[in-house]
Image (cartoon, rainbow over all chains, first blue to last red; front, side):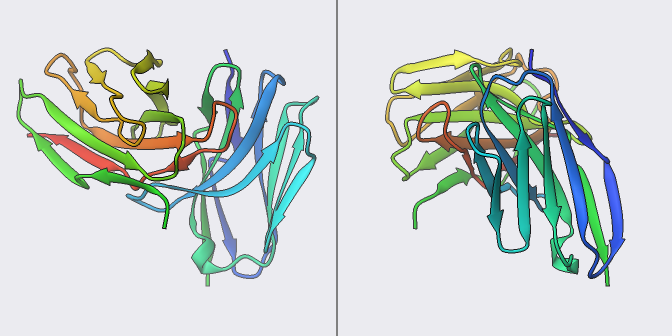
Length: 110
Length: 112
């Protein structure tokens, strides 16, 4: 059964800092990996979708990488802003369904 | 704009009562899903449907029921058999099983 782990569980950084969120998964036979953002009490907003054949995806200040063989993905956020404060969720889709990590709660201090 | 609409945003259920959560999408997606989110835990799959008139149990289906009579709609009923229904419920859809997911804004269910 696929298991997804996100480290760290919480992260607090000063504004302007570059940061990396980590995601690992146990079964490398995945279709794709998706990063989401969740604000308190809200639904999930898709940030980046990486197909299994891809190595990375970029959107603005966000860059996500995928290394299937090692079962890892990273989400890089450049020049962090207070508005980036949220919980970031990593999810993998394999033959069965989408499995989520527990998330990293990010706080960016002004 | 295309998207997923969940209603209501907040729902209160009395002990022993069945309640139904609505999920509607206009993305023309084939697959739809229901997840439950509890504090400090990841999302857990309740039910999913890949085509109309067909659905499958997820990891925590006990005490829940669904229907998929239309492509656009996938309502979730929380029955009295669900002993701990207080949670945040999220509906999602994808164009197919391996595609990226789009989520609704969620329904917060509280037992009173």
